[in-house]
Image 1 (cartoon, rainbow, N blue to C red):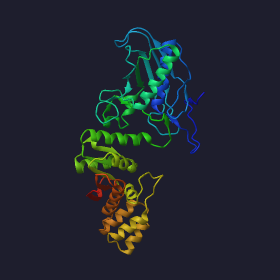
Image 2 (cartoon, rainbow, N blue to C red):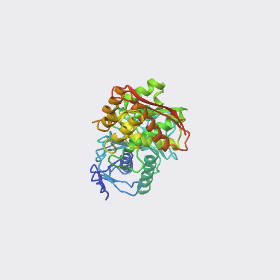
Image 3 (tube, one colour):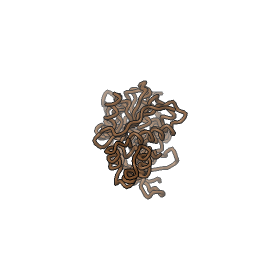
Image 4 (cartoon, helix red, strand yellow):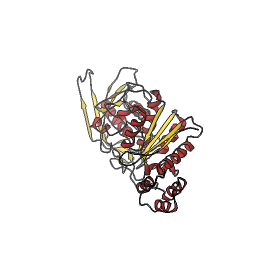
Length: 380
């Protein structure tokens, strides 16, 4: 047997428990529901095989079989549900109940996917699914097709089924994700490429950045903004008048934005963020999280000197408690440290984008949202 879902496995390298994606949970629920549809018996736990060969087994949280006509479809339906365990990752869908309801489909139709309550529907082009389709990503679809074929072969089914996926409270949870901005309306996406959630890999956030670029490109946007937070996003909109689907919630993942734009270019990128975070980008860091990169006050002092700071001010910047104190000291002395940091951040970005036709400008703000530094558009 594999590892039982709900007690996620241990990552040997980090000591943190890994978890399972919504796609893995949906696959397990589908397998259990289809077997019950054919045999009347729910397997519990239910084992699946993930793309890299892991064989987790998931405990069922809910199950049931109904007869008769429901929503215009006659006949038996089977439903099974699995509670998602994201391990030690701070995943917004941790603890969500992922359900699969399965019933017989039209002969020869194969597996037809439906979005039930809490699962979104694609409404914008640029995603890996056509407009109008349930937001069930390609890998989970393939895993679900495979378990349907497996169960059909074992228990004499045709494999022609409708699989309706739902997530309890999914529409509410989705409001704290990128889905509304990406044009996925009505709930969550059923996600996952490996089936495994690696703690603090932030793979879902990075994937959302990529899908944001895809949606912007499909909408014909020629200018996007990567912003570290909601305040810098508001500033970018105020400065450039960008529409919502041109805004990338970059957070700390500057590298994710730049590396994806290098392969999938948009003519112009604005990077907007807090002065401290962008000073890290200026120093060459592509991950701006406080646990993984620190403000280099020595570099700030060197930039201040280049901007005209005397020895006393340069020493004060080097000794500053925070980046905010450094910028305040320089602004009081008329030294354009903010502009110099913005220019250095732009240089880092262009270094990643080298060979790609993307023009970059940078906006640095303070905590109140005041612009404290700008670097005008510059390209390769």
